[in-house]
Image 1: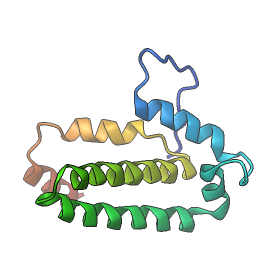
Image 2: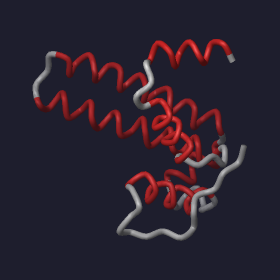
Image 3: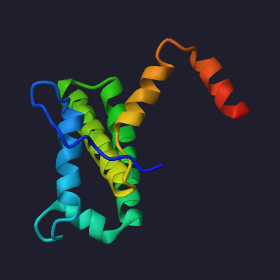
Image 4: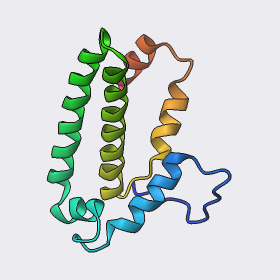
Length: 124
């Protein structure tokens, strides 16, 4: 399923994710020397997945530090989570998937029991 971002962006109503998705789309086909995002795309999906995995691990470690940590350790967790989300968006962009269906899926799950939602997934 291929989806593309809406090209008509309104800065007054776009979310940060929408704005970031637009930038990622623009940089996807840029020269690898001009953009970190372009360099990742040029290296391919496996490199992007490696970065997602690296950031996921760093987020887990930061969460352990933040559990009983100070403000700096809690801020480090926020920074690592931002890195994870960013690289996840790069992954979606590389696969020509828009982030909005992810938000729609989260919205669909809102108010649904986690146990019920998980049970529905295992049945399908």
